[in-house]
Length: 79
Image (cartoon, rainbow, N blue to C red):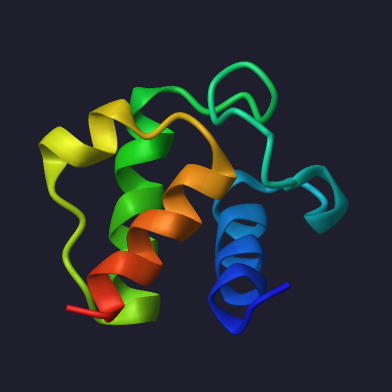
């Protein structure tokens, strides 16, 4: 697990108040982790703070899994 992935898992678990073990790359934010639109907005803000990057609203709307979000953040950090 990459450093970005480890940090993202911690933030996601803390924001959604779920065990870190539930936060897997395949987990979907809505169905598997129970996040509604407000929770996803707060989560995006927390991830932006953690990684000092911007998560565009249009992009956040189509990212459905933890792995997708980690990949997106890794891409933002490499640009």
